[in-house]
View 1 (spheres, one colour):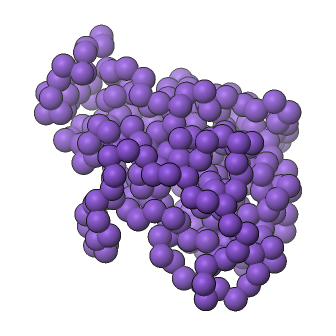
View 2 (view 1 turned 90 degrees about the vertical axis):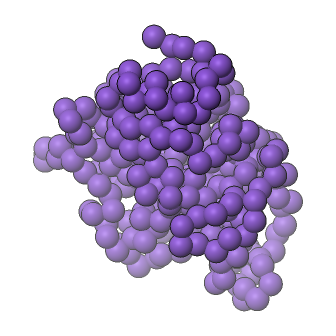
Length: 318
């Protein structure tokens, strides 16, 4: 039963969620509702672009484990463990896409290539082909952009040793991290596309680029998604975000109440079972002190919030 969340205080929403369901624990949100919305994108971006190929079904002789975490299978790949912070920009489509590419670059090279791919380069330079920058974009087109144009190296805000670090600082205070200031109430403006690297980085922009070889979407099939992750590494996914997700703290998220707020792109790194409930293990881009150390779990096998209907896979050109 859904209630009018707009008429509730944050504390009333938390109390309602913790009383009405036992899948996940809710707590007072750390983000204002306006800031929460700025992290999301329009639902129109939650669809597969035309011309994207379907991933081939993976034939496996081994039985998939009940629990799986890509961080444990590929411990040499730092990127898989890294939690991003998209700040006050609806860049989740670019940030999560760059994250998956970085993971798979490392996996395909058996840990030899640890370069981080720039979310900023995708965000700023993919243009209208991908969408509208900080107001959202098409996930699989961000992957495909990396096939045609390549993407340079990147890193966190103010990172050195890369071509284009992330453009926006984390919003507000975060445990054990530098404080850069608060964020605007409205979305940041999309960065300007520049065909050059940051000052002090010695590699030319064009020579710094990393390319994708192929891009696919994975069928809305729980086993096929698990096979893809187990064999090739984390995948990008999109899901519909409802008002109650803002209060998530830990456990397995199941939509309980509230209206749709927008779409969100994330990275699935594994799966498991908690208290008898199957879940996907998801790496978010809202900093490491959000949710379960930057991650969350969402119910698996029921297409919860349509998360199993929008899965993207990429093979890097190595």
